[in-house]
Length: 128
Image (cartoon, rainbow, N blue to C red):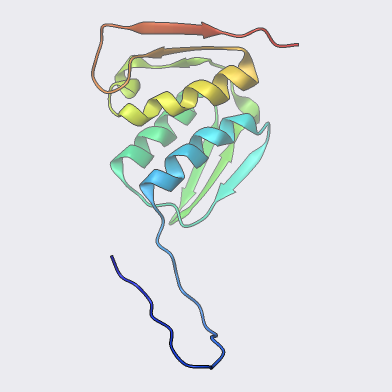
């Protein structure tokens, strides 16, 4: 891991560009489900897991627009509470959709993530 060492009594100034992180952006993408509107995520890395998250969002009914490293998600159009099995098994991180979908829509159906096709879970919550 790189590090910065600062010595001396001088003021610092300048900018550091922080690269987008898959581990940071996946929960952020799942959280866009909670917003009944438009979310803009900047500095989004273009990795396979991120692309799968985009596809899950689309299957839920969200509108996803990608322009270079900026992603715009409109979740006002969500019309499904089911994460397709073929996408859920593609990555273990698909389980992070469970909370936001359940919170916003009151139910969610998801296959066990990460290539285990034994369990199909249905979750329901009482809202209100």
